[in-house]
Length: 131
Image: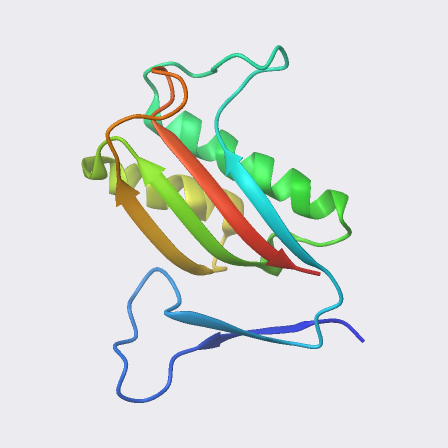
């Protein structure tokens, strides 16, 4: 039986646009806890230096490839934790997420932080997926 994944927002909780307050999963067989993904090239070095949207898109594509490698799709992603150097980039973040995730809206957290592992990184995204 495949996992059933559905948005979860009981009455009395604000239903936010653009993401789900919660995701309810039943019948899961596999849970993937994905490390923070950044924009890196084939050599492992930072890619798309200075381009926030391109870095966000690449991080989302890394998550997509990881989930697909386990037999799932982007719709199996139930939670995103995103770390950015500047929350003013939130509109570009949403555009990049829409490009990769379409209308799928996992439960999400976005936090501004002071630095990432390399100074060239502008964003890092970790994810949880159920397959």
